[in-house]
Amino acid sequence: MDSWVIAMMLGVSIFLGGIALVAFLWGIKSGQFDDEEKFLNAVKFDGEEELNDAVSQQKKRDELKKKHYTPE
Image 1 (cartoon, rainbow, N blue to C red):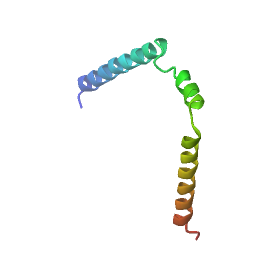
Image 2 (image 1 turned 90 degrees about the horizontal axis):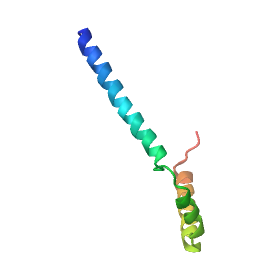
Image 3 (image 1 turned 90 degrees about the vertical axis):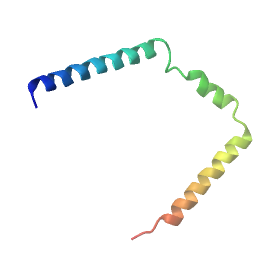
C-alpha cells in the first residue's frame, strides 16, 4: 500500500474516534446513562407472581443443565 492510503485511513479513524468520544462524553454529561430510578422502581413494583415466575424459570434452566451434563 502507498503511504498516503495508510495516512488517509489513520486520519479518518482518528476523526471517527473523536466523534465517538465526543458523543459518549455528551451522553454522560446529559444523563443518558443514569438509570437509578429504573432499578429502584423495578424493585418497588415487583409482585409475588413475577418473582415466582423467575424462580420457576431458574429451576427449569437448572434441570436442563443437569440433563445435558454428562460426566466423563
